[in-house]
Image 1 (cartoon, rainbow, N blue to C red):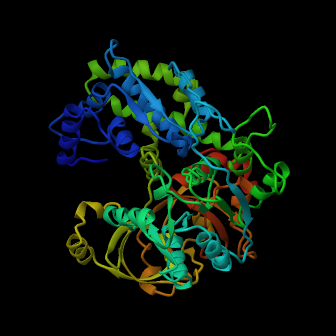
Image 2: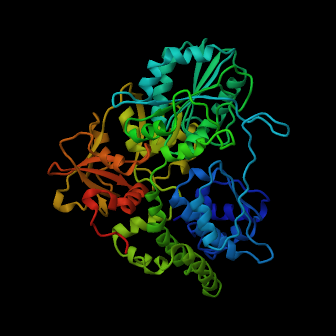
Image 3: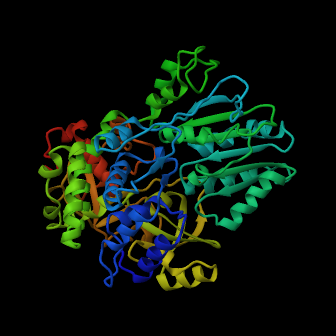
Length: 579
């Protein structure tokens, strides 16, 4: 919950005075769920101002969000809908390359009038149409257990060089799923390619706006070939003129989004894409091979000449099973309860009629679950429930494993467990970190100690990934599996630095645990395969004091596993956390 009066006043002033407001969905969500407070104002002032001021709300590229975020945005829209004057009804525009029918159905169930506007596309040149995509040669690459994306890129360095230098001033883009992997790849490829031949650059959360602009200029003007290695920072709103694309992906929406970076501009003789599929998701390649043949030519959209719809094939291959929609049914009503109960703390004469209208619409979506689920107040009476409440009121989820990183002259935050396999670091005090960060024009508010587990300075990035795991001093009789719980007394094993190994000792983390085979070093990935989890899903291996091994997930990932646990053999008959 945010109570700083400065932020409240700035947001309030912007909403009242600005004709156009550009914000991220997290701030939008926090306002509509009453998470910004100023004791000098009524708690409904800020949400009401947001609801009544803009005439049109636009959510761009909404397909990148999951079922939990769709549930949250539905709550927000209902609040805005009933907080506006009838003569100025709510208008919202969701733009998406792959709109989800489930979200559209939820909007209609809750009483919104929905109009779907489909783009008009053609696979062949014809009058009145502008070409937005060139013919692309697409290759799916299945990585094995001993080969990650970096190793494949190094093995294919000659091919990459050939593809780039075949064009005058070749241009390529590699999109990977993590900052750590991007850093490794950039350093490795910079040693393989001479800068005079191929200039390798990075765009990620480590790179500030000025440096990104410089890289974009090089893409346009550099006389030699340029190869950009990036994270999802380039997924949205970036228009590169490239002819080579290599990317990792986690779901069909990300696949379509990233493939859409390629072939947007004419002028190259050939457009080539490689999709890297990790060994942990073997079902993807199997599904693709069932529907696509080598050398097959296929349109991106269904046409009279083709029976197959490429987008449908990608959705069936990459998307998790429909059971993921269980998250919406399992947690959506409870999240809505949280918003309604928070609203009740305001002016009763104003808020009660508003609550009743919103609740009536939410019952169309959730039915009697809105009233029969474990009550929001009950959650607030015990520590695990409070942690669940906190997580449900975050839009994209949070992490209690966030590290503040001092990386040469760069300062950023990153998930601790995703970073540590790739670096050696110094654990430093907050004051030293902030003093240097401010020297490089970073505000102290970027690294709020309420959300930072540890402050680190990178010593060096490692050439080889070091496998890390978690260990707890708790015995099996103290551990709860197949339900949400708080876990403590954690040690990071596998990392060579003692001060790093112990940096989680004082943390209590919301987690979901399920027992796995202790004899198999990779047995925790059986859970990922069983549920067909995204490669980005935060699944870790944890060992208790007796040597029993568990697959574990934290925060929003833990909520997702709780909603799907009936598909895991040890948890088939376990009691649901909410009832």
